[in-house]
Each structure stands twice: as structure tokens, then as C-alpha cells.
Amino acid sequence: MKTVTTQETQAAIEAQAATDRLGSFITFEDLAADEKALVQETWNVAKNAYVPLSHFPVGAALLAQNPYGQTKVFKGCNVENRFFQATICAERNAATTAIAEGYTRFLKVALVLQNYQGPGASPCGLCRQVLLEFGFDAVVLQVADKQSNVYRYRVGDLLPAAGHEPVACTKLDPSHKRAVRRLKQSLARAYTPYSRKPRAAVCIADDENGRTRQWLGVTDENASYGGSAAAECVAMRNARSAGFTRNATLVVAVDSLSAPNPIEGECLQVLREFGPDAKVILVDGDAAVLSSVSELLPDSFGPQALS
Image (cartoon, rainbow, N blue to C red; front, side, top):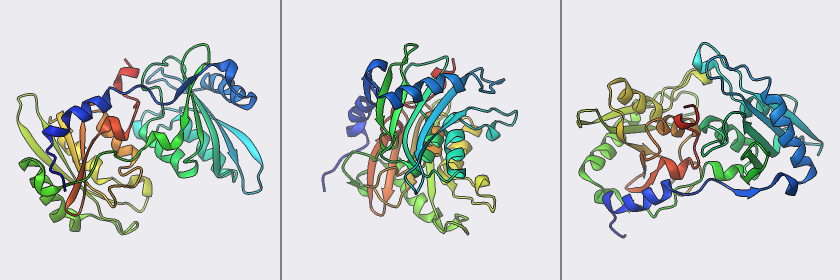
């Protein structure tokens, strides 16, 4: 097995962070008739967004199919709440409405951020996770400008697998080897009575004085599934609560190094708040893959879109 240290992958990770936006640029005139209709619907439904907090309207239009082969368009806008966690995004709004009517196969989804069409004007991590559940090969039409031109790609492109070769955990930097040991020691503490899938994570970060610390998290499930907390989110929020938010690296125990979507979209979205250059180390047994939030959550929605 080839020896690769964390430092030796730095250039590759930085190059990944600088990649272009997802998809191919397509003019509105070159879209199919049903795609043009979807794009137009996104603008219309975005006008209904309830956004008293962000003033950031988003619209989504989803073409879905039911088991009988019938198709239907479902629309959604973002609906905010004074309790932030109760907010629902436009894409999930449309998706859950489709599922409620029995349309469980997603074919195409168009979305528009009414006030912003720059880099990162793509679904957030949570929406990516939901779309992936019902339409890995569905087409995404991400509105690129006020002229309704789009970037076109697949839902599966939103949460890709890590692309680097595995390395032996013994070849990692000392601090990362320590994090791996903590992962393995902590898995038994995970509370997973429902999924039966224990998971652990360590967030390594610096504070404003340059001090580095490691913050542990394990999965904490709840009878109300939406009240569950992923190990990665627990670790990262422990770090943030203590003021350690710089030069973040997330070390995670995963089920497979080669599977697509090795980390849930929600967790990657939380990591994105630490910066687009945040690093990820995926650990499976005695092997690890070095990656980054920009690789696992490409063209990610972040604070710059709201500024």
C-alpha cells in the first residue's frame, strides 16, 4: 500500500476546492419543453416563499413519477420559522409533497435562488440527501442567471464518493492517528436503538489563538427520528461551542470507503460552515481516505450566498 501523508494530499484537496461549478451550462432556449416549464415554475413559486429571517426566496419544481407510470409536477418554496430548525427548504417541500401523493420516483428537479445565482446556488446538504433517496439519476436544472439559463447535472453528482486511494491508518499524521483510536474506542457509546448503526466522529480544529483540540461525537438517536443527532454534527458543534472553528478536519468512521455519499448531507452542510477548505478523513477499519468538504459536497451552498 502506498504511503500518503496528510500533507502530501494538501495540493490535491486544494485543487478540488477550486473546481468549477457542477454541471454543464445550458441556455434556456436549448432546454426541452418540459424543462422550460419546470424552470418557469421555480420563479413563480419562489414568489410565495416565507422568508422573514433571511429575505432569501427559493423555488423548486419537481417532475416525479408514480408506480403506474404517471408523472406530475410538484412545487415548493422555502418556509422559515422563528425556530431555525423548523425551517424547510424549497426542494424538500416539493419532495415531501410528491411522496405524500405516491410519486416516489424523481425524474427532474429545477431550482432557483431568486436573489442569487452565483457559485453555491445549489441544494443544501439536507436537500441533497432527500433528493438522493428518490432520484439518484434525476436531472437537476439549477438556474444560473436572470435569463433562466441553467447548469444541468444529476442528483447523484451532489453527494459523490471520495475519489482518493485508501492509505493505511498507520501512515496518517500523529494527531489523526490519535483521532482514529478515539473513534474505535467510542463506537460502543453510540446510542442507536433504532438504526442499530453506531457511528463516531472527531472534529479537529484550532481556536483564534492557534490552539488545536479534538472534539468527540457519537450518534444519539431519538424516538422522534428528526430529533436524532449524527455523530459528525455532535463533534463539530462541540468544537464550535468551545470556539474551535479554524482549520477544521473531520475524522469519521464509515461503513465503506468506496460507496457514494459516505457522509450524510446534513453533516457535510454543518462542516461547510467551518469553511470550504475543511478536510475530511474517512476511516474503515485500518484504512483511511483523505478528502474534503469541497469534494464530498461540491459547489456547496454557504455563507457567501447570504451575504
